[in-house]
Image (tube, rainbow over all chains, first blue to last red; front, side, top):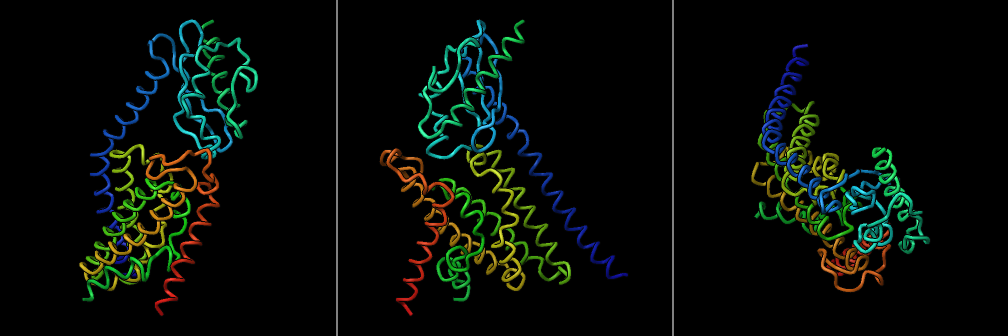
Length: 151
Length: 196
């Protein structure tokens, strides 16, 4: 019995020291981590909405390798002002090419009336139809949310 | 002399990845580019050197029956510290490495060295063993990362050397990790065979 108490006491002491150390590191790093995240978000918002008029939507359509987290800027007259991919897990070399500016640029100026379909008004990425469609859905989703909010 | 041996045995002779074949999970997962491999190596080096040092420091006051839970507490503390620091100081790299930073906890190289070496040896030797082992880990991981990025993405450390369009994409996908690691092991075994 005494042995069990002794062992648990030693283990508890180690846990307390560990928790104390972690708390110190947490207090020091947490403000930096939070400001990093905020900075990344505002920087992204500025990129997709350069004029500052309109609204930024965060959408995450289902891609080939998981959800694609992206920002879509919609201007005050309902047109896409910019698209930015925040995180994605598409196939490297194929689907991961959705982050390329050349691909994302073709969405600029699209409105809710455009079909936003690969091979119609969007040039798909070779070998990555699903990833291309996912980005199209994401933009469509943002545009629809923008119109329903505008009414 | 023995201190030097403790340091360098992990680099080639007992290289954790290519000779002992432990800690393969992060090696396969994050070696798709040289910079990811380097980031992972630095994280593992920090955790391994710190945990080995602390385990060696407290080895005389730790009762034998509960040494494993105590090792795990020490290792997970350093992994969490590493996780916070990386998130604060290198957010881009942290996103790239993703879940594999917290998973350093279960990297068997670290618990293995605590149990097999640091628990039985003085502080200086243990710290050097940790440094040597993590250098061996880094050597293997970065070589695999460089080879895979060179063949699969047409560059090294993010610099493009030739068009990625003609690169063998399979090398940056999971099969490329197995192919690269098996060729490196075969090559090392051949070298070893010659010296014997």
